[in-house]
Length: 109
Figure 1 (cartoon, helix red, strand yellow):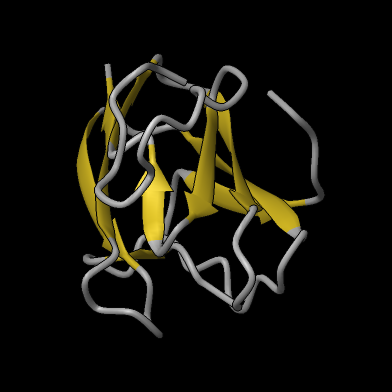
Figure 2 (cartoon, one colour):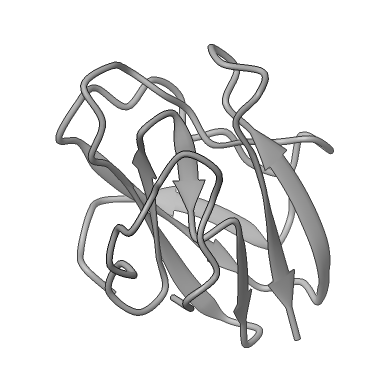
């Protein structure tokens, strides 16, 4: 799990929307929101060293869990947030462990 760290919360995105988000506005920069049973944005591209905020704006618990075990936010209750810092270049697919249809991608350049 080298190169990744989870810690605290803050409001640090792009305009690609996840399924189920309708006309939701894009979240703040470098933030992935969990809303309407989807990640918004669906794909987020960031520079190496960027800290991404995961914010649960839904009415049920979610996780952001790397498909390759690089990170796992653990349970995020409604309204909760946490961060992950991406120090490794690559494309990282992730999912919610509770809701298999919730998937997303972080691209680190």
